[in-house]
Length: 279
Image (tube, one colour):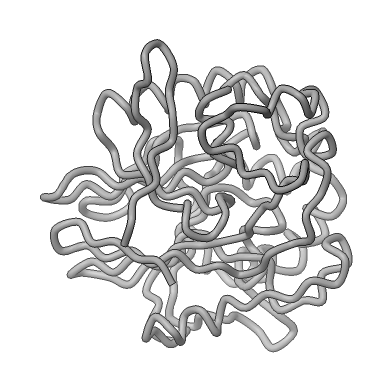
């Protein structure tokens, strides 16, 4: 398990599940396979795209925080019967579900909400759930482009907590708690937010789904098939990456393959590249 420390904040990368590799043209239908050749950190093996489905555990002096909540226990029909391992990963990080104080969601897609609630009830009984208000409005209002597998997961995993008053909607860019805030990053979903932790050792940002692989750092105009508004997602990605490079953020990307989740965005001439960070 990969982890980093920034001053008094510790972050663990939790791999909930690893789907089977898929053709790159399935995940990025507008990008020819040949365009991936020569990228510094392309995420490919034998022409296939290897995604990871992850979350992050962040421990601050004040709280134990889970950023996103994986696919759930499964089996997940949309993902070919895949089962999540988030609770095992938390145990390996020395954290019981009862010890999680807060869950901060970047957005409400299926692979980010699955462990919030199961048939047995809420998985994290002491946790307050924070979610982007614009995404809550979109998912409860049948907004176009969300996808039935996402709306089914929302009904099963988020709606029970909403009904119980366990979810706190937050506006774009809201302060969540001292030293923790949202950064508006819409496009992948209507209310998508990244999560910034401002520490004495610099700013650490959990991206959510701004980028699904390091290649999008080098090619921010490439769109993943799940982007609800691809044009807005491209503008968001470009602006975020420019900020990350200029402000020297440490970045945590949950869909990057295991070992590549932590990094920095750096300049290489006129381009941007992903520079992975070791533990």
